[in-house]
Image (cartoon, rainbow, N blue to C red; front, top):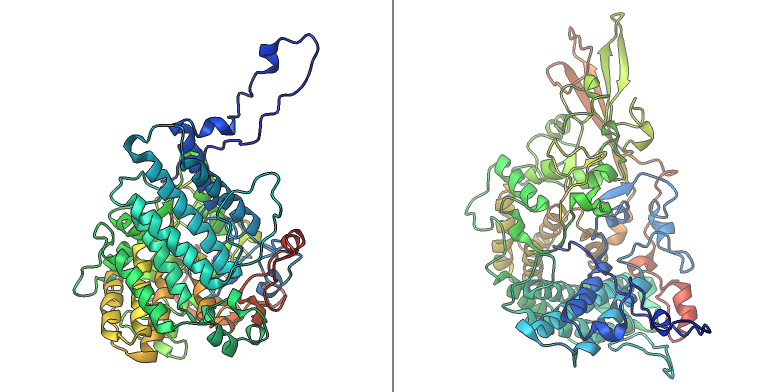
Length: 620
């Protein structure tokens, strides 16, 4: 996996200082922390280090303090002033688009694309021996990375300028118009095909691109290309902003057959499924037990105990390096453990986990509403920390308040020293006695991607959980989706049920539109927090009814049963009657509303000022 990025300066070394009487050797001394650009491509190790540096554009993967999930109906971001807490404001201004992290940023992606173009140009005639086909290997890696960075630009901004060579000083014109969506997709696919061919059969270090990662990227981008948002006619029907846009070819296909595009997506996805070295626990003939289903899911999220076979391309972290991506427990964990509760799940998400029998969870069902966290999809227990959920030992200063080590997000009755009943706030609430300002607004916490090992004290220990850029399971979903759209429901169910059996869930039996809806919910819970929902809801053009919904929370109250006396609270249905109520988040905290123009991000005003050939996206 990606262990270290080596940065190499390619600035021209201009040591033209004239000092009378200076020793020539002193004047010509090269900086000890830089390497001349001309030298890089005469040395295989330096060339490889340069290519390794291009991987730096991947950043922390999705493990940032502020996560893309908080622009969706998965989570909200707890802390104010970050430009992410209100979807409408955070996405609507070309002059200040709010939170845009490094893997979304237009300029940062083109910086990496330029590095890729520079490397490809120099590797055409390298000044070092092609030992062990290093030139082909590096070229394949670069092609994948360039395709990945272009796919990032395309799925956030639509068609973008295709730059496939490094600009140099003295160019007649540095401005260039946006290419069409079709041209961009074709360019990405061409790079993926080249990368897969060049890397086929090569043994690659973990975290470096390989044949599978190139095929997985091709599967994803072709699935997007066949979707509603990428079909200009469909997008116009569903979006007034798109209908009024004079350049629809920049945002979608204006010609061609969607059925043919779905077939290409299906074929590309099947190529990934045929890679027998990947895939975890997808050969079951019946649902796993609840315990096994949770364990199977956790093993994939943690990248261990066989679950790592599902991971095609990842970004990993080393405790000793103390990289921010290893702080998911601190960023998202409960305040009652001295963590920051950054991205907290909303009730909309939790309620979409089915009951174990495959039926929808509903608060209108009295039995389910009385014990909402019992007998649910086993993936819930690996993904969400809810009131009463078992978790790690508390830190020493809090342990006496919670010897049972359970999440406390409600309000509970206890008996005080005078024998009177009093109401106390849970340790993991915003009225806690422990860092209440870091408490969840939603009543839930993220569990997925947080190492449950009690030796990992999230407050001050860096974990080593990998970020999954591409999973084998995503290719399964892409394949199943294409099958559904092509009317091949039986084949789609066969593959979807492999995922469900692994998770301990019963088989799907639906067809047609009903199967499509079950598929979408299945992907929602399986790929939660993996930066899939933001793109899926947009490309399916269901964002107004999903991403634009008001975020909500769960209110939990524990009332002592008659005759019961509890002085130190713990979750205990034999001593307490629990009530649960779903309420909307205070609009002063999070007032979500989907704007029709937000299917694509605005191109920064600074970029348009620099390049007058750019056309702004509709609605901005």
